[in-house]
Length: 574
Image 1 (cartoon, rainbow, N blue to C red):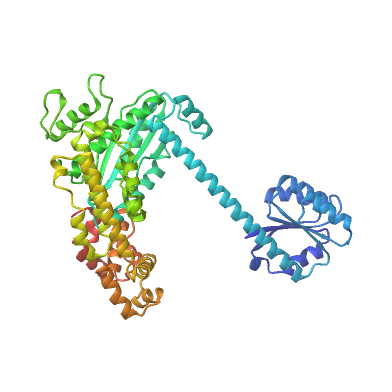
Image 2 (spheres, rainbow, N blue to C red; image 1 turned 60 degrees about the horizontal axis):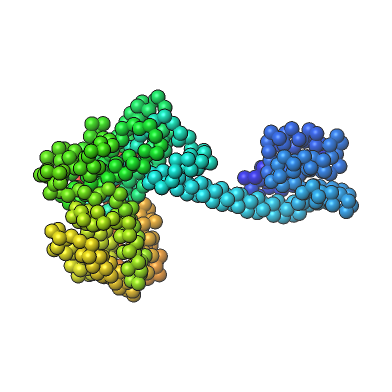
């Protein structure tokens, strides 16, 4: 709704204009009126209307003088000047002021309606342009902010340059004390429901950021899909702020999340901004090593809501003890595993987890290539993800095993989304080589990557080449868009892809290995899991949100599908 102010010295004409058109139906609201420019100007300053309709000849302050002062202060305000004088001089003056619309009186209903519609379209386009410009400016700011924190965390720029950037971005990071809190959240296992786990992870992350960034001088940095870092910059109140941040973070993990793995680390406070990168690297390595040990089943993981005493404490190793050895000794004490030998070496071999490349900490890097990459791009992709691996890391058996296992898990998630008839053959082709466990090497990894990626992309191509691939994709998208409709029918889905229900049922089962009902139930049950874990909605509200009117039927179906009732699932009783 756009606002209008009318300035006219004859009261009968003002009242007539109010009745001349259906203002609200056209998208306008008349919010004020005045008899001359002198009376109108203070009201216009207060109301700031989108459009001013003014007579040209008025006592005290005429329409041209009023238009001139309006354009000086509010250049985006649209002005319509009404004149009873058909003289070029007035029109020319109005144009010079910046008035776009000059109309002779008496104006008819049709003329005013046409003019208002034209101005409405002009204003809508202006609003869209301003919104697009604001969005672009915000995206540019967000990108600059991300680059700043990336350079701060990686130590790729001098502190002086970073402080200049911070000043430009209005980030108050120059303080007496600093502290980092790192949170890693991962799906516990790959599988058909991993996508739902990522949805929950992103929701937790966003809610956590919204809550924590209310704390003064606490800054967020998304290091990868799994890792989020908070930088606290403060003066004497560093400990109080730190406790507040840790308490808020832990509160997000109060409920049971049996599908996810949470790892939280916090550094001790330090005094220099230049030390951020060192502490970030230590904390990141610590979490990666812990995650590696869980993935490789060297330690078991069962969810317990984290408490202050369960958060990993990160300190700088002394000059006499290397980073890897310091972390290793601490982890060995905690888990009771590993046989520490002379010189700090152990069977677990954690030596080259320091400075692990981003491509091996963000699981979506490989996933995105599997979805969009081409066969001819495989060599370049492998070269890119291996280029930052150091010679020291290639000497680490554990690190190379970590890369093998990360690749295998991403491939598993990918192939489970493909046609079921391909699973057995492709599962065999991506199996880890026997030598990966005892004799992992760069050569063996490169060979495995080339063959496994090639087989996966070929399988993806064959799957998409299917006669009905586009149909299934469109139908699946339709189900994801409409699963919350309680009256969603098979015929609705079939009609969305212009195929008869009977034929659609047959091809859907052939292409996916599931019936339409089974797929729709899988989608609804997956979304129900998310709502149970991330909202306070009642079971009835959740049932309705995922397409079931009968909450009892929803509960029975959920229990049959997940082997646990909605209530117990929400409580984490598995």
